[in-house]
Length: 69
Image (cartoon, rainbow, N blue to C red; front, side, top):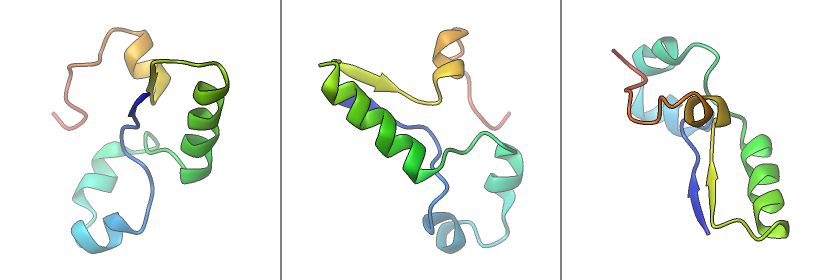
């Protein structure tokens, strides 16, 4: 199964984005690790080939648009 998680709110951003530019640009679009894990488990249970998160970006057809303009 392929998982396309998008931005996940992890400690990575504290290290790689010290000035918080990326996080500010994301607004509330980052996902929690718990949500991503539950969606992956659900995908496994339903034998999905692919899990795309956040779903609303893919559902509206904005998959190829950048998060940061």
